[in-house]
Length: 85
Image (cartoon, rainbow, N blue to C red; front, side, top):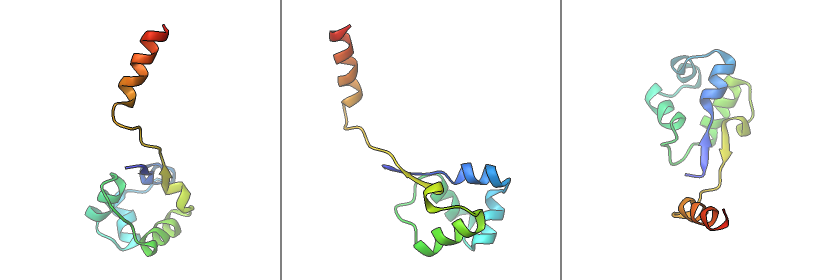
């Protein structure tokens, strides 16, 4: 998925545990783990706002976009390097 979640980074900066964050945001630790580990398909704006409020950060501190490489792109790059090298 091209959206990565960096909750771990903010937790470390704030010296806060997952359990404490879940309690303060009002979600279950299991749901927070799904979001934190990048397995969530969506996040409610209310949840994102609560995370930002508790962690004193901006949404961009928690979420970032990464371009996906097309399948086979890595192999094609290696083949090009072998030909060029």
